[in-house]
Image 1 (cartoon, rainbow over the protein chains, first blue to last red):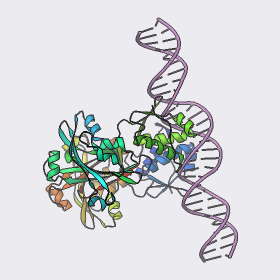
Image 2 (cartoon, chains in turn green, cyan, red, orange):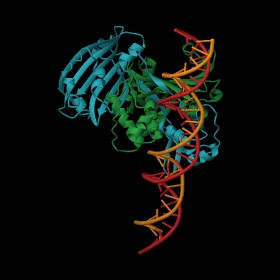
Image 3 (cartoon, chains in turn orange, purple, green, brown):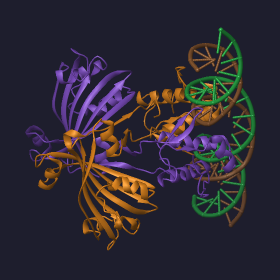
Image 4 (cartoon, chains in turn purple, blue, red, orange):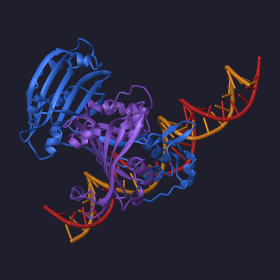
Amino acid sequence: MTDLALQLDGDGPLYEQIRRAIALKITSRQWRPGDRIPFESELCTTLQTSRMTVNKALQSLADDGLIVRRRKAGSFVATQQSVQAPLTIAKIEDEVAADGKTYGYELVSCKALKAPGKLTSAHIFPRGLDVVHIQCRHLADGVPVLFEDRYINLKAVPAAADEPFNETPPGSWLLEHVPWTEAEHAIYAVSADPRLAEHLHIAVAEACLRIERRTWADDETVTFVHLTYPGNRRTLVGRFQPGQRG
Amino acid sequence: MTDLALQLDGDGPLYEQIRRAIALKITSRQWRPGDRIPFESELCTTLQTSRMTVNKALQSLADDGLIVRRRKAGSFVATQQSVQAPLTIAKIEDEVAADGKTYGYELVSCKALKAPGKLTSAHIFPRGLDVVHIQCRHLADGVPVLFEDRYINLKAVPAAADEPFNETPPGSWLLEHVPWTEAEHAIYAVSADPRLAEHLHIAVAEACLRIERRTWADDETVTFVHLTYPGNRRTLVGRFQPGQRG
DNA sequence: GTAATTATTATGTCTATACATAATATCTCG
DNA sequence: CGAGATATTATGTATAGACATAATAATTAC
């Protein structure tokens, strides 16, 4: 059980005040993981507000993983206390432009083949699937800032077989030609092998940041890509305020 | 301007159907960046629903950056098309436990000092601030999986001066002792220097993934930490479905 | 005593309405 | 014509009420 006294600060919309007040109770550990927080109806009474307003605050806390809600049982402070960091990965063209630099693109290789074993055994593509394998790099003021290694599912995107990709980056091309419904990312560090070092104009064995992205359209993997950035040239940043949305 | 015909699939709550239908228009590029999407009132009429339901769908699309909303003007497909990657950073103890392994903790060093120049010049801490500097490592079944290098603001957390940190990891201790209101993350790759290599039992110059986290409480930086993982360890980032929340 | 049925309840969704707010468009007056 | 005042409008916030749903608690039947 929990102590009820929520203190609203009078700043901004009511539902944000409620969210902030509850988030503070949680981050200050007055309400601890596993604790049941007051029912919506209780908060309505003590705060003299309508249920929809309280509901909006609680839903957003649940969206961000601070609380867990269970019908009939109530709402509880999440037991696994983790930190959220909503990363926004922009298109490299936009990122270079936002940096005030001139964007450049160079195709390295592009060929059709059967899905390689490392992807079929990882259940990314089915065995025997026709895919296009593209390697290319992206430049800012002529300096390589990203090496891209991508596979495109030809069954899902037949048009990719006829596209040379020598002018248009495959990422942009795909965005124009295929609606996607889901994406998953993994992030890790890799040492630059000689080939990668050459393409990115960095020293062999230099640390690089790699984003691995798998994109689906209706339960079928449309594309699988490795985006490799020189380690010192790229940082992903995310900010999270438990007391506030956005 | 945009074509209005939204097709609901009848699956699940109405506001999710609306969200999905609009997200599909956007990912399929029928509604392109910059396009104005129908007004709430128009959607209400064509879909025969109440405004609050439509509003809930549009708000969540705005939260996820797919659309931008402007009073009086309307709602527009976001111009910078970026991909969201909801990164959840769990406590290392939980992560090791979830992996079915035994968690271990070892303090490497812990001492009080003035905030070093590299942090004061980066405006992370004010000049002359008393801080505690802690270095420690975290193990899974005896194998090092994370090296932690942390500074704690003693003005904000005086109790940290008396804590030896030889049993309790500083992250957990802080969570118990300080409410935080905001956190910012930067993720990048680094090459292991000899000291780091020794602590993580890896080769010198091996690529490592580093999460840099700065945590605030009421406009004051409470702690600044480098979490360095061996590079082969991937940080898994969640899925993002434009057609669905959560 | 245990299994099946029924009642209860907190959250989940939806509606209809109202007023606030900020940005835009229009009007008025010099 | 142009600056300032005024009206308009789409989103933002809040309310009160209704029913759905799923999980729990209580009851009943065997």
